[in-house]
Length: 357
Image (cartoon, rainbow, N blue to C red; front, side, top):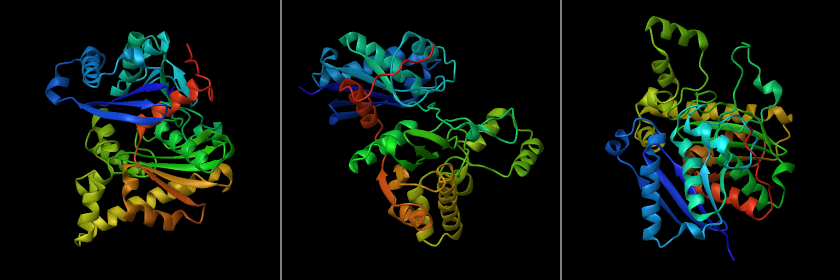
């Protein structure tokens, strides 16, 4: 008898859900929320009843009952730093998310919605590899300013899932490999996975590392400080320049890599230069990620929405193939990754972790 697993991934303007039998997709659905609907709520947690009703209404149309689920798994939100894995949803976790103790984001609703639906069906609720997964080596945390240590905030769910899928495809345990995984999306994160832990990775949330479609990446500090002081920018404005209005958006006015490729092909020399520069900075970050394992990299994996671009990945391979073989696994596959995390616990392959009090 297959395990029936419901997955929930809340975003700012949508709630994506998926139903899986074991790890096989039965259906996925993107439940859209208009700006007008979202605007009626003051806080993210105020949206709970609204989103829960939308999910339950859709499940009813599919003749799916909450009592059918073996587990419900939600996207992990902004929580305390934690090692990777599948976590049981607990009261302390829910309390931190409901009060936005570590930040406010739509993904905070993932565990709360999973818990509410799981209670309807009397089954466990889980989260899997939230963005705050922190397995950094001590030396990777240190910067030139003691008050500004490096933080581990990255596409942990996607990176870990892709690494485990790849390991399975070559019949090797994930924790026996040295891998570099690069998630290429609106933000870009490049992680060094060694023996099952991501010991070094850029902070993709704040725009650290390579520049991307929307993020500025690491900048010449002095020049940027001068801009901030000269223009008397406040925190919100500066943060937006780094994440949201950086990268391709800043240079070319778009975050769409396909548009940039079309413009470059049509003879736009500036678009071509910026496009090639982005690939160049990604390649440098991937090369740097080989340092923690002294260059002994078994494989490099490229994931995320931009990895669908054959033009981009071909050029990237030219830069990085000297390090290790490269495999492209395009897309984000977050709902699938959530189902796989819950399935590993249900089958006893992994044990559910406890969230620290």
